[in-house]
Length: 399
Image 1 (tube, rainbow, N blue to C red):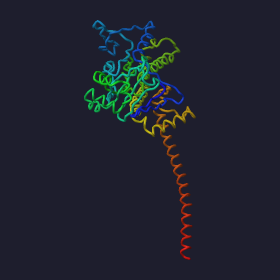
Image 2: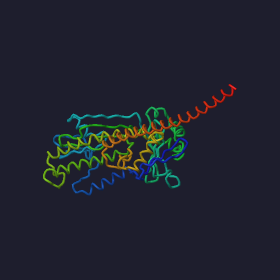
Image 3: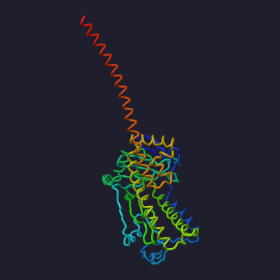
Image 4: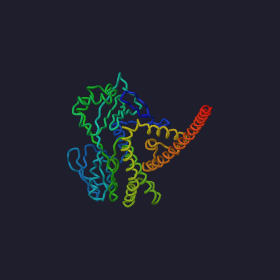
């Protein structure tokens, strides 16, 4: 997808490119990605894939994990390293919290969501598939993402109080008719009514915690460590980056000692302990940063994308990025098209915001001063003319 397509209430569509150099982001189906990852993992002889198993408990000090297998039987598994990648409601993290002084914050935002579908029209996409479609309405919004089967998945994000005001499926039809009339026409009234009645209304929350490791035996990754709201599309990317950063630290720990270049499984217990502690210490700041950025991007998507000040800055930064691409980088570009650590992205963005504001203020001041000088000159010329006329009238009356 090359940009956002903004839909007004009148049906007008305006494209906002993600990047001045034409770069794009990808919309990937979760199930297809999981299949690809499972296929890739199965190629490693050390990997055994176990389906239908449920985590029950763990002795983190001993490295013993208890699971229920597909037959409902309990099994205890010995592990050198327990990796908790079991989502926002992580059971591994819960066990860690009984053993380590973990700072933990879980916050539900006051907005929920409900998903809808938009079918193809005459066998093709109902809208441009190379955009993320947004219907921004201030405190709420509708978005639509393209799928490979030429449908769109549409999601309504809205305060719970507004969901509560829509008491029936008939109410949702009137709501769409008032705020998203072009989407309602493409989705179909019956579909909107039926899917609102049958589809669950989901909550949105984010998590911040630290540390991510315990005693050189356990590490948590992905949503287990830093769940975030979905509005930057970085949750999965951040999880992959967790793996990349952890692997990088472990490989460096392996080579630091005596130049070894074997498998990270060859790390001694002490080396692994130090590597995990380093990962937790260095990763936390980046994770906190992207959690905050994702929340802030929700405000941008539902309201700022139609704000004149936002559009002016977007245009100005895009122009400057073309001229000096290494000095001025739009926030979205830094997050989505670079590997700049998220915490550095925030610091650079704040510096950029400060000097842009100063530059705009200085430019406006100079422009205002110039206008004032010109106006004073014009008024001076007009005043001289008035004085001449007044003098002439006095001379005439004197005669």
